[in-house]
Length: 52
Image 1 (cartoon, one colour):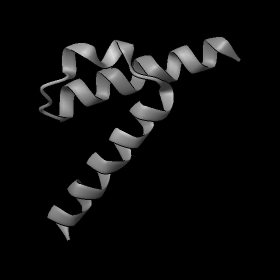
Image 2: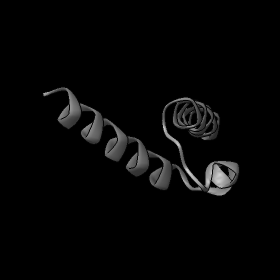
Image 3: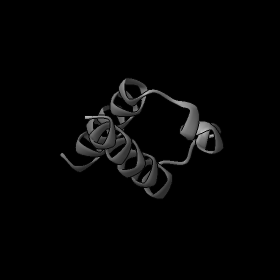
């Protein structure tokens, strides 16, 4: 279970760094999985609003 959480965190950190300009991008490693998931959802929502 712990490995799955760490893998998901790594994936989200990489995805956020590639797709979102953030002042805190160098601090993403310190964020919890919940914080990363929330930021990713915000990004996806904004992206979908821009498309549609």
